[in-house]
Amino acid sequence: MVLGPGGSGVSAVAAAGATQRPRTPRDSRQRSGTPIAGAEPHTLLITVDRWSPVPDWARVYRQPGEPVAVSKSLHLLTLDRLDLTERTWSSFVDVLAHTVSHSKAMLPGVGTLAAIDAAELTSLPGIDDFLLLRRIRDEATSGQWQRIIVDCSGCGDPMQFLRGGSVLSQALNRFWPRHRRLAMAAERPVIAQLTAAVDAIDRDCLDIAELFADPHAVAVHLVLAADDRTRRLSEQYLAGADLMGLPLASVQVNAGVGSESPTELVELVRAQLDTADACGSVPVELVGRSADTIDRMARLRKLAVTLPAPHGMPRGSAAARIEAMVDEDAADDTAGTTDTARAEPGGPAYRLSWPQRLPDPDSLALGRSGDDLLVTISGFRHPVRLPSVLRRCTVVDADWDGERLSIGFVPDPAVWPQR
Image (cartoon, rainbow, N blue to C red; front, side, top):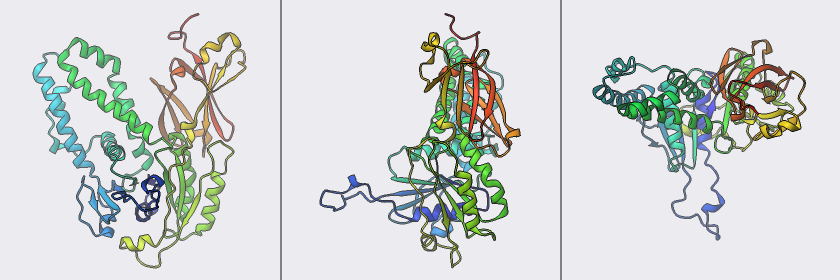
């Protein structure tokens, strides 16, 4: 996943990284060292920007939704939000229409939704991001590609884009909780098809959120331009990546955009990444300025951009740990926790913590919605899914020591088992 502030050259860095052929795995060669027939590595470059310059650089026609061969080892897939929304909405409306025609008692608004034609839509708030992410997930799990590079330019705020699955799942379960969906399906079998469709969307949302936080499968690369705006935004992006648990694998400082000294920005970002947490170091690479105008893939290849592979180390909220503040008599309640400590009288029974940057500590805000902890940092809010042991607890305090965000929980007497 290649992302960054608008105008930082995200598309150029993503395309340049895609031109560098990945190393062939050892198991794709015979013992004699001769490549096995058909083991040619394949890279899929995905762009979600309908005005992306990549098709022009690659000298190929735009075919939204269909991979187009750029070279023997590189294909390009251009995704169109409107096209995905229309096709998915048409399928969902068929389910709604079937439910309306076979049920006298209906959920409010279902008939109205079923009457909306796909051609009337321009976008569905939050859902179009989810549909793009789901298509990317489907390509990633198809087994067809050895490597997939996603150019996240053209999607506004890339952090908002990547959290689309989590936000949609939260909204679905807020407006129509799963236990109510299942109960209604049991009472009215005609609604079972509708609830199954909603459940499938919810499962896809959770699957997408887990995939993009998986450090063994995904590597996130942050592209920063050598200008004042990016200098001011760099720590905000790093804090957002911590909060979302994104497996940040590299920071690419693009010397081809901006007029400031790129080496100074490299040193600044390295200092921001130099924290005493257990996430490990993140390389900061300098992408040189091209001597020629970028108008073809051959010139991008000369930039020799290297995008490191997934490193397997969870970061940020994905590296969260639970500390049980209990005594020996309550040891049975600590199943699934990673550490224990002595409880203070009247203090929290559990503490959830993870490495987190806070550019503006005063902007930190916490909330709760079902099984999610809503964390707001510098105006960016993200739902963090709570471990099972904390879903029956309430938040009592929060603390930040300059490196880790720590949140205290106490059992909720209304749902906690009584001894």
